[in-house]
Structure formats: C-alpha cells, structure tokens
Image 1 (tube, protein in one colour):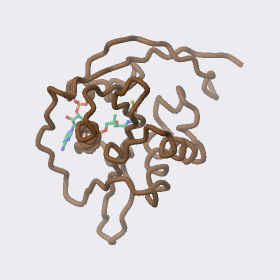
Image 2: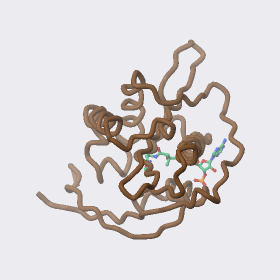
Image 3: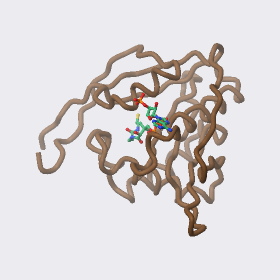
Amino acid sequence: MGLVYFKRYWMELDLRLWRAPPLELPQGYELLPWHPELLEAHAQAKYESFRHDLDSNVFPCLGQREGCRRLMQEIANNRGFLPQATWLAVFSNPRGQTVPCGTIQGIVDAQHRGAIQNLGVVPGHRRRGLGKALLCRALQGFQQHGLTRAALEVTAQNTEAVRLYERLGFRCVETLYKAAPVPAGT
Ligand SMILES: CC(C)(COP(=O)(O)OP(=O)(O)OC[C@H]1O[C@@H](n2cnc3c(N)ncnc32)[C@H](O)[C@@H]1OP(=O)(O)O)[C@@H](O)C(=O)NCCC(=O)NCCS
C-alpha cells in the first residue's frame, strides 16, 4: 500500500491573554453543551463535516460514519475529556426539526494543554460564523478549567481552517508530517 505525507501545523494559543470576541449566532442556530445523549449527534455532525474534506484523506476514519462514531466514543472515554470544551451546533429548520450541523471536542493532554480534537461544520452551514463560535466556546471551556495553553493540529493545505485559527490568535509552533494511505481513486 502506498503512503502520502501531509504537512501539518501544530498551533498553540496563550489562554491567559485570550478573550472571547462578541459572538452572535445567525437565526435558528444554537450551541448545546456536552451531554452523553448527544454522542450520536456529534458523530453525525463530524461525519458530515469531514466526509468530503481533505482530512478524511489524512484520517480515513473521518470519512466513515462508523469511524466517526468510534472516534467520538474514544474522545468521550478519554481520561482528559473536557465536557466544558465540547459543543454541538444545531439548526432548527422551519419544519421544527433540529439537525446537528457542527461539533468540537476538547481534552486536557499529557502536557496539561487544552487540545482541540475535531472542529467541523457541515458544508451547507459554513461561512456563518459557526466555526468561530464553536472554537471560542471550547477555548472558554479550557479557561474555565484553569488551563493556560490551547493546542491543535491542522493540515497545512486546509487554508480555511488555518485562517480561522490564526484569526483567533493561534500561531504555528511546529511543522509535522503525517503519513496516510494513498486515497482511493488517485
Ligand atoms: C474549517 C471550518 C470548521 C470553518 O467553519 P465555518 O463555520 O465556515 O467558519 P466561520 O464561518 O467561523 O469562518 C469561515 C469564513 O466565513 C466568514 N464568515 C463568517 N460569518 C460570515 C457571514 N455571516 N457571512 C459571510 N462570511 C462569513 C469568516 O470571516 C471566514 O472567512 P475567511 O475564511 O475568508 O477568513 C469548516 O470549513 C469545516 O468544517 N471544514 C471541514 C472540516 C475541517 O477541516 N475542520 C478543521 C480540522 S483542523
């Protein structure tokens, strides 16, 4: 099996200096705090956010419904899992149905940093400020827990995500290369 190498940035943010910008969600959207009963909705939002995106090549499990469910279970069972840094974005459509449309999860890593896991917004709901709102809520959750640094890893080619992280104050502190199987059909 062939391998392809993806350039990834390790980015960090000093939470002692960080203040959340004013956040206003568009009409119909709401952010829900973590509850174990929302695990399936997080997995669904994760799957729909990543299935057609670059990172499903870097981490093939993100392109599979079952893979996303398993990943959510692993995150929720992680001993560093931080419910305050884990949020679900939902949209209430005009028919009164509530659909998951974005997710973020946070854990405390071995270096006592707040580590963002997977931030994802479902394609039809992007460019409305949900990515920024989810990330800010997670960072506030880290601050409430007393953490002083936040960290995340992002694929360098994922310019939308890199821009979002830089806008909120993250800076690249290290460049890494992640090997992944050559995506099917290439
Ligand atoms: C990266 C990602 C989470 C961003 O989510 P998003 O909800 O689109 O993010 P935001 O809406 O907060 O910001 C995105 C852009 O929309 C713009 N925007 C925000 N509100 C807007 C509005 N009301 N009208 C127009 N543009 C708006 C922002 O200024 C930003 O613009 P820029 O990229 O040109 O600087 C999303 O693209 C995604 O899920 N990608 C796939 C999964 C992924 O790669 N996740 C990151 C893994 S590390």
